[in-house]
Length: 386
Image (tube, rainbow, N blue to C red; front, side, top):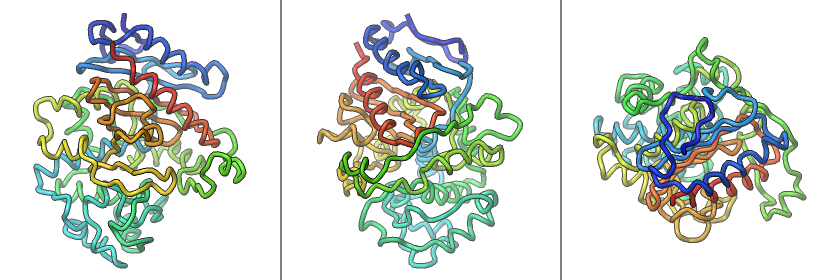
């Protein structure tokens, strides 16, 4: 049988019809229930798809089965997918300087930053500040772009840019297309694929979005040292900032690096589209650079392993460090995807044909709990192909 918990927005296939192992799927669901049954998370949603079809879609805890979640940095895959379309249609080239599209960005030595730097987190301005109220208007965002300075030379190192680079990507997309990025996500991604995935949610149409619930205490320096990451700093990815997305105007804004709204079913079906490229939505060479080619292997300063960045996503790799990239231990080296704050998961594995997503509105400030949960869920999901 297929698994569905009350929401009928998408048909769910019989597990054996799409090659899913019922016992392994049940083990995955049991693992997802652990924090819900213990009262450690308010709700979660998980989904599995294969061969272009949904086989598992389940909501656990205090959430409506038809509800959606803020997917945080898993949004980056959606923004990248729009940029890939525009690379074909508007002639955006990865090696082009950002200033070819957004001259206002080129201050303080940033004129050498390229589109590829934005997509691979090698631009040199990882924590450039931009938040409310400045982010609510184009004028405010452009003013911040002009003020930003480099922390290091572009292409000289890798450091994750939680939101800054994707604000610039959004501006590029809007200038070459003449359309709002939120509209581009709707008309070019969600509508053709039949998804409820959106970039933000308009004020007055947010009732189906589960609000963020923060809890817990961040790890102490001693706890971080015991985990082997004594210098770890979450930067802007802290509960105080994450809960800002509960404000109607911020949720409506559609933060391009972290404001996506979707169900787990939306995410796995989006990743099935990246696997199968229905109707040749994306030019094959560009799609390969996004989903199959590792363009940056410089080490992540937090995990101390190769970053394995493609043109917009992360690739699991064959070096045994896939769990440190959010994929668990059992995916193939070809798996591609992007995780998100709070323990959001979204990936696809070309070797098995599986795509998996797990979403929650519970933000545990003790981030190591999130890392353990991501590894456990992804490791179980990746072996669900029969």
